[in-house]
Length: 336
Length: 149
Image (cartoon, rainbow over all chains, first blue to last red; front, side):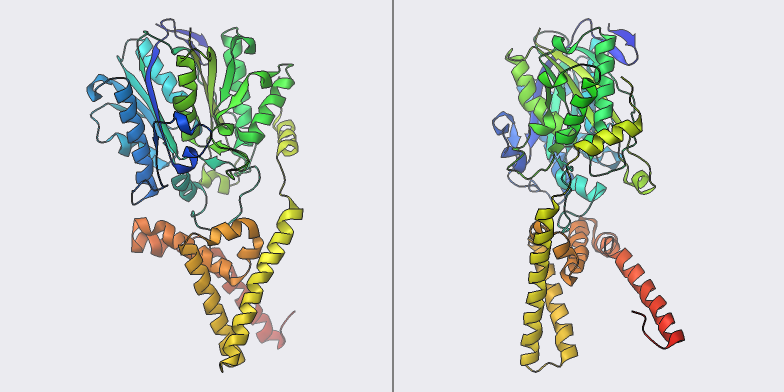
């Protein structure tokens, strides 16, 4: 049974295993530098569906089915599924899972959902409440644009600090300890509001939350950045990554040495016209489930602090003049 | 180390890239100007084929709106607008794009609650305040007898 350190951190004494994982992405992501690692790459953004929402549903279904297949599991082997996405009512998760006969726990943590769901699935497995628990999330550029911003074909200009919502999904199945990668610890972050009001600068709104959660995790577990070969943030992009490094510099910590950001890994930043990088639940989900977990399985990465960040942006509240709260959750994934 | 929101926002401002005005302004000017030239060409053409000045101007507007709507439908207008910015938003073509884009986007929710209800989601405020301003001007004109400049 795990230990609770207080202040949001849970240590997993039994260190449950990441049993299997899979990712599914759209065409733009399929042209990015991580293309070889994804399990499914769609040929066009709509993925043959009539709506963007249904296209995102397909991504979740595909990631989930691949994760089951790769783990040689049947649907009935999964005790619980933790899933969420960016859309109102967690639409794509509930529609993605409705065809499966599995207890569903819907989550909203914006782009932090991959870490949030993975941490919760690990808690359930660690405590013996679940044999296998799945964690899943997705986002789709077009479904997010139409809900949060403008219709896709509207001729507006995106600002230099804006990020590109990834069309992607990722799914992890957590099981009792057997083989690496192991989930060693997790920190659930607090809602952190740095007073940022620019809805086109998500990285800027989230960097404070990432700093808060990473610092808390290190303090609670009495670790330093030297204990990790990678501190991986979810989707801070160029602006947020720079800010995170500056925030740690104030503490005389050179996080840049071990810091990587999924938002800067998913696309060829200079060629694919994504401005400050990638964002969305699917960004950290696909980078984790496509590339990072594979690297940990192969032993090429030993200790990764996966810190997915979410801007809890509500268009309604932004229009009312409120600032954008953010949250970050950290999961320590290890090859040892 | 604790940081105040004010300090954070100063750091954010320093690290956020600004729009490159030396790039965006000339592009907006050239592409926006080019749209106006196309308008002039149509205007002259319609006049040459016998339309009066007012009819030719009306036909030019209709043509530009149609071209913009078609380009939006083929997903080309936003690709031009990406470079042009205000150059494609300010001319009448931008207004057409602002109506056609949501109409296409929300057709998945049906013709009533989708296309019908959402068509003016961007252009609506322009129409509301455009009409309000014209009523205001009309009143001044009615009272004073001259058009304020």
